[in-house]
Length: 195
Image (cartoon, rainbow, N blue to C red):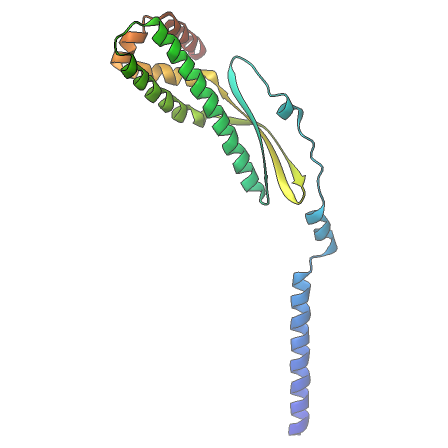
């Protein structure tokens, strides 16, 4: 009887081990439908808006693309590149406006004024870049990775209003620039957009 019990136990254990091994093997092999979904490439054509970036006098635009194994990571990389691009455009815009103001103002402290305007310019870029928004986004697969195209924009008025605000906060700079024609035009433009 003990021998029969031992044989039964061995057979039972062997069956359990075989079942566990089969279950492990099942877990490693994905069903055929899931395999197709993972390996299937979605042909993604480069969007027209990416190749022909929109342009107008009211917004800064940036179109970027990123490739990554993780979709969210690819989106984040594309957004970061677009923000960097727009920040560069805002910086150039603000710097050119300050250059125009400085050319209209005669002052002996040119180096100090240059330093002040550079500081304000950086502050305007940091403050306004949060106003960027995604206008279009396309995503697909490419060689097993995720490909993302993003179009972002930021209104120029956001940068202009921030610039006016920063200049007015600096009484010395405001006293210098307020009489310049360029500053008056910018201030009028900002006021029109508010109301």
